[in-house]
Image 1 (cartoon, one colour):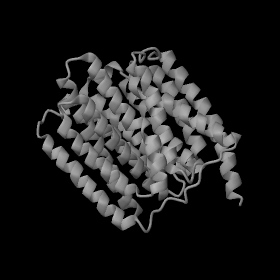
Image 2 (cartoon, one colour):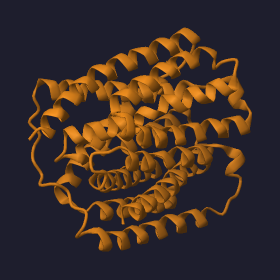
Image 3 (cartoon, helix red, strand yellow):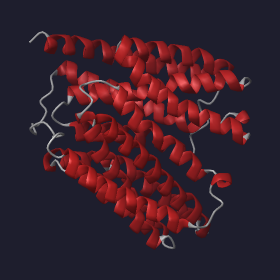
Image 4 (tube, one colour):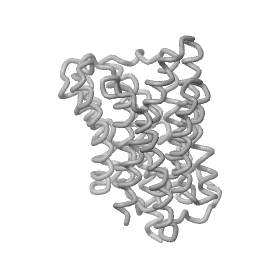
Length: 350
């Protein structure tokens, strides 16, 4: 049953992010002549799609209707297509729908993960491909958007059906307001900073070789498989080891990534391995508040994107800059994971 749940959520994750990317990039953006309105529309979408996952996650922790939350999000994404001529409204509705889908799916997957990262890595990985395909004109030249809308609606129906199957098997733990000690607060801060850095890095890696469509596609596959492998390997060798090893390797590879596309792809793959680790670790610390944990990290994603939105994306896009920021990320994550390991060891002793 766990494999079915993760497969459904991963598939719908791809469809929802594809639908949102096409809506914003193919329908809304080309129809807005005013640069300020366009900027506002895109910012609104990203705020509601990412930052709003935090309050939605807190509510979802209490309501405990996760698949219903995700299905409702799908319907909102489909509904947003009705407002494609009004960029701000379309982006607002789609953003809220995207957030609701991610929160509901994230909680359900974390609930069945047994404190491991493999399943969450699979769930989160497919969204990157959806965003890439929906943002690349070469892949979105078709105009039969109703097919995509129907796919999103079918996804909602599938999630409603899934809810009926899993409602007695997958339940949130009893909602408890988290009371964190100093070590746990430090872990939360370290994990969030790591995600802020990863978000910023993910948006600035515009290597020249990415202008080749095939290499750009390969680099997205590196993101997808990096997240998958990060969770799988992390469960086998430990969260700390895979986090530090992957970031140190990627920091070195980034030095050569400007001139060598193969090493650049590897750098991207290793860099993304920490994604399921940070998510799973935070959800294990906030065990009774998985929606809050998911929302905190997506809020961090939004914060990491802000410098790029406001034109500061190229400051660190140099060999030394990428190396330095990746090493800083490794140090911060090491501090957090060292505390995390001690806490989890103490919990396992009881």
